[in-house]
Length: 204
Ligand SMILES: C[S@@+](CC[C@H](N)C(=O)[O-])C[C@H]1O[C@@H](n2cnc3c(N)ncnc32)[C@H](O)[C@@H]1O
Image 1 (tube, rainbow, N blue to C red):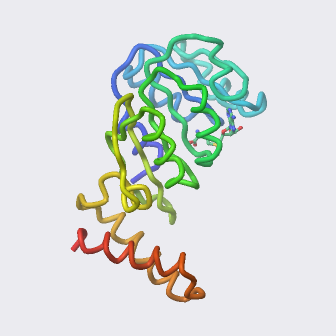
Image 2: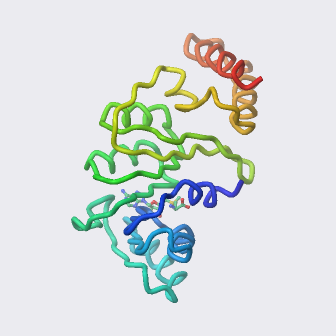
């Protein structure tokens, strides 16, 4: 599945969506053209990246642009949905520390267990959480809302809904086990191998 389409698939209908770290602006364009959000605020920490989004979407009149670090670029403007995609989980945690009052759509590139832990420890509930495969890479996609949720270690590692059938999660776990078995048998590696094997039992 195409990564940006997978992200788009979980975006709810809303008034204002912020595409924070929009870079090329392709997701901004998809959302603005679809009408799923009436208005999109496209932001990036880099003016050069934002310029790409401005160029791509010059024909659209329901997109606003703002340069800045994380949510500061929104300058207090109310958004119903905030999308953070294609950046590291640690960067997302730092951005989300400003506690936006919005539904979140997240596609982290790294530190995903850490991000899941941060979310549930900070008043969020993970509503959707699934793996997709696009162009040789696995990606996690999440829809997150304000609320309460408790995650065990397995859920933090492999996804809040790792027990649900997901062919991409299954192949990701199989590859992970195969790879880790070639590594040194440290306590941490053995723990992850055994946890992944346990998660795979739900995917049989
Ligand atoms: C790899 S691109 C991902 C672009 C797009 N969101 C996607 O999913 O394809 C990451 C973008 O996040 C931007 N970025 C990184 N840290 C940021 C921050 N703290 N605030 C806003 N944008 C940030 C980068 O400048 C870059 O354009």
